[in-house]
Amino acid sequence: VAGVAIGAGWTVDRPGRTARTTDVVGQDQTPDAMLVESFVQGLVSSVGAYAAGWLLQNYGPSLGLGMMLGLTGGNLAILWLLSRQQVARSTPVAALPVWRALAEGARYVRRTPTILAVTLVSAVLNILIFPSMSLLPLFARDVLHWGALGLGLLSAGYYVGTFVGLYLVLR
Image (cartoon, rainbow, N blue to C red; front, top):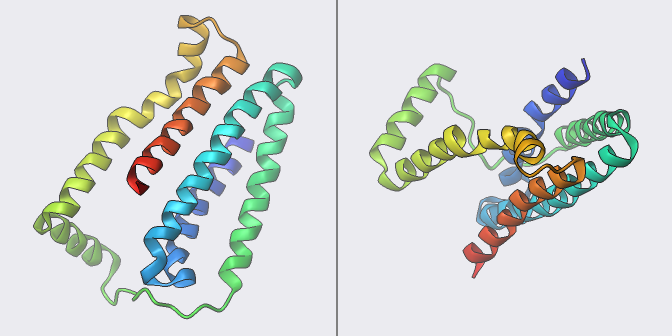
């Protein structure tokens, strides 16, 4: 039940924040705002992954699960508060039905080589690379013979890569 609640929270959290970014900062500052958000999320995630491993090793899974439930609830509360703010909408809302708008978006992606390339790279990463994160616990336990703290370090390494990538993009 807790896993479903956390997953449901994550389902609306990031897309909800990302959708509001342009409305909050304006179209000119959207790329910078998204880079800052990615940097902060990477920082918090890398520290969080290590802290989660430490908590799991020293206090067991119950404390971690309770913290995840509490943080997800707090995150959803903040998102709800943000949704109540009156912000001038700078992102146009499509007048088309959803399926027609999706089809039009797909046609646009096919016609625009840069967007198509980014979409294909993103698809490959999401299909082939990101699912490997779910294998980290097995890799930590069976290959490296590490416990929860080692798993936290492995997970943190993934997010450290986010820092390096953002640094290279911002240079």
